[in-house]
Image 1 (tube, rainbow, N blue to C red):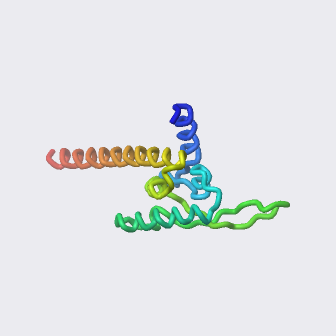
Image 2: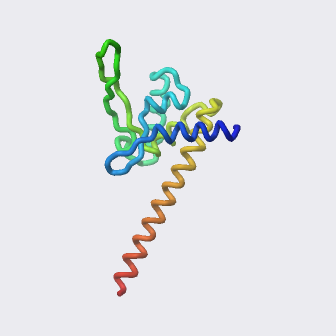
Image 3: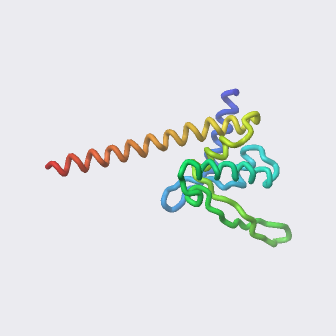
Length: 142
């Protein structure tokens, strides 16, 4: 994959990320659908269903990584309606990518992108946890 395509896709994924008030990073499933070149929501829901199964099998709470929400969209002439959407954590996006069709260039990219980004987040979490534990141990001895 060309470097210019990698930079473009990375920018696309990062520009679609949101954060909760608690600082948890997430993507909207309908945005991710388009980033991964799925044209039909029904087809993408099949991939999400497989990702939820993988989440459950890894002993994670599905609702922690795939909360259902409603999203208002314009349907013309100023009218709006609510459609279903899903907030996907980084881990959920990783699982969605892993359950997508790797023959699609954007899926193959997403598999690598979310695997690397998820691993970085894990390392940072572990480093912070280790530092906090070390700090507590040191100051308990004083």
